[in-house]
Image 1 (tube, rainbow, N blue to C red):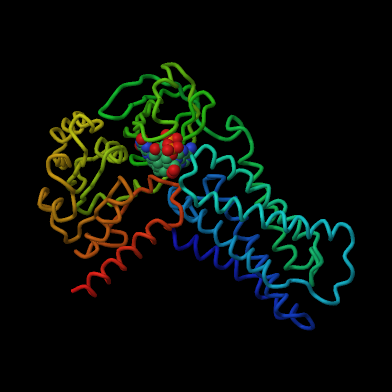
Image 2: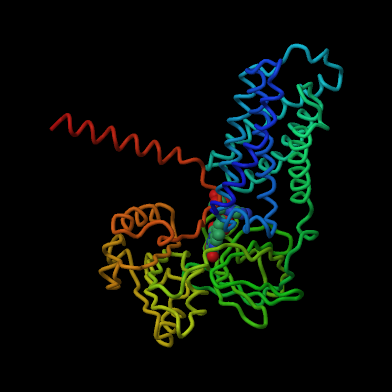
Length: 436
Ligand SMILES: Cc1cc2nc3c(=O)[nH]c(=O)nc-3n(C[C@H](O)[C@H](O)[C@H](O)COP(=O)(O)OP(=O)(O)OC[C@H]3O[C@@H](n4cnc5c(N)ncnc54)[C@H](O)[C@@H]3O)c2cc1C
C-alpha cells in the first residue's frame, strides 16, 4: 500500500473540516459532528467504489491492486463505523425549516442505505460465504451508496449543495456513482485483452493454461497478475506464470482450491475465448541489485516462475526455495530445475514438507546458506505461513520493504478468527502459569 494514497485519503476526509467552524456558528455542534460523520462515510464509500474500478490510476495512487483491495475493505468497514455514529448521534438541527416530501424521502433513503450497508458489510467479513454469492451481494453495495448520496443531496442541512462544502461532498458522490456504473458495465465493454486458450496441460496439482492474443497484446512485467474470464464465465485473478514475450503469449497456472477452480478443466477448451483484464500488481518491483531469497509455497510459485524465466545475467543472486507437499504436487518443478541449470544466478532448493516438516525461516536459511545482511525476502503462498515467516525474519532484522509478499487472497475478513485464536492462546498460557 502506498503511503501517498493513504495520505490522500486522510486529506480528502479532513478537508471538509475547514468549513465547519463557520457553519458551527449558531448551530448545534453535536448534530454537526453527526453530519460530519455522515460526510466521512460518503467520502470513504466513494473511494471504495473508485478502487473497485481497477482503473490504471488505482495502482499508481494506492499501490498494487492486491493491496489496494485490502484498503478497499478497510475503507468499507470505516464507512460503516462512520454511518453508525451518524445514525446514533442525533443529526437533526433546529431552525432549518420544515421537511418537504423530498426531504422526507431523503431521510428514508438514508435509513435504507445504513441498514443495507450494515447487512452487506457483515456478509463481506463472513468469509465462509461462498465467493460467487458474496460477489453478488457485494455488487448491491453500490446501490446503497447511491441511496446514501441521494440522502445527502436532498436532506435538510446547515449548508447548501452549491456551497463549497456542498460541492466538495457532491463531487465525491458523483465520482463514486460513475465508478459504480463503470463496474456494472458488461466486461466486454471495459478495456481488456482478447485472448484464446492455446493449450491446457497438467503440471503437478495445477492446470497450466497458455493463451495467445487475438487482439491487443497484454504487456506485463514478470511477477504480475491479471483477471481472466473464459468465454464470459466469472473472472478470477491469477499470476502470469511466464515471462513477457514479444508475441504476447502468456500462461497462467491454476490450482484447484474452490468452487470455480476445482473443475476448471471441464469448463475450458482449447480455442475458447478469454477476456483478460490487467496486468496488475507491484510484486514484480523487486531490486535485482540486492541478494534475493524467494520463498514459494504450492501454487505461490507462479509469480516466481515468471521472474525466474526473466532473470538477467547481471542480476543479483537468487535463492529460490520451493515448498510443496510432494514432488508430484509441485507445479512446474521440472521447468524450474532446467532454469536453475541454465541460469548461473539462480539456485533452487525444494522443500518437501511430507519429508522435511514445516519450513520456518531458520530451516530455509540453513537450506540455502543465504546471509541475512542486505537480503530481500519475497514470499508467495498461504497467509498463515507468510505471517509465521514474516515474524521469524523480522527477528533477524529483515522487515518492512525487505520482506515482500503477494496478497493471494483478496477476501480476507477482518481477522476475527485470528483474534479469537490469539485470545484462546493467551488465556491458555495464563492458565498454565497459574497451574505452575
Ligand atoms: C494477486 C493474486 C494472484 C493469484 N494467482 C494465482 C495463481 O497464479 N494460481 C492460482 O491457482 N491461484 C491464484 N490466485 C488465487 C485464485 O484467484 C483463487 O484461488 C481463485 O480465484 C479461487 O476461486 P474458487 O472459486 O475456485 O475458490 P473459492 O473457494 O470460491 O474462493 C477462495 C478464495 O479465492 C478468492 N476468490 C475467489 N474467486 C475470486 C474472484 N473472482 N476474484 C477475486 N478473488 C477470488 C477469494 O479470496 C475466496 O475467498 C491468485 C489470487 C490473487 C489475488
